[in-house]
Length: 201
Image (cartoon, rainbow, N blue to C red; front, side, top):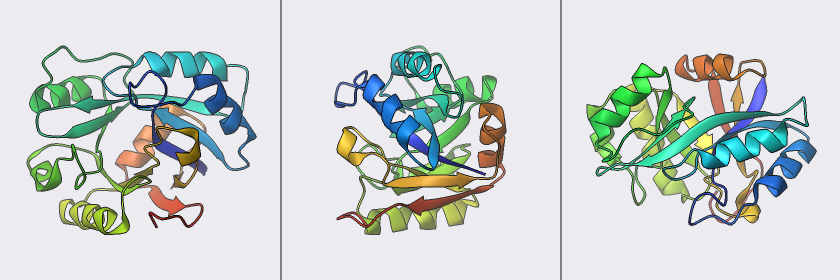
């Protein structure tokens, strides 16, 4: 079993202040969370920088990803190392992800830039049911959506600054391997958890 945060932004997102070097150092020092997905807004550049820095450590894993803005709401794609072409129509993004065997997650469905109940119309793999930047009532709505859609719920801090890191995580029944982790998420072998109480929990 591994512990993973599936939603982190770096300085390659215009609204984030997290330095890739600091992120890798904190991940290496963390006692239990050893896997993160880099999900910058509409770019995969941050993933490549973080992965390069993480190569010095054998016990941590960086999952490639991106948070894509569509006209209807944000989608997180895990397992992609390139961007779809513009403009980003939601159906085109889903087709792009399926062609690359990526995991498609509906990010914070009931917050700003969330798909909300429109998510029911689309072929997605999981719902972000525990977002570290969302209040509990909003996360509860996301839990209900996942239940209605018979989809796994996943957790992500959605961290944009260092102080927001490591508050929520996933327990995933998989080894330290990206392909195995993505397969486990699709199969529902994932459980969300929080590390501490804060104003959001």
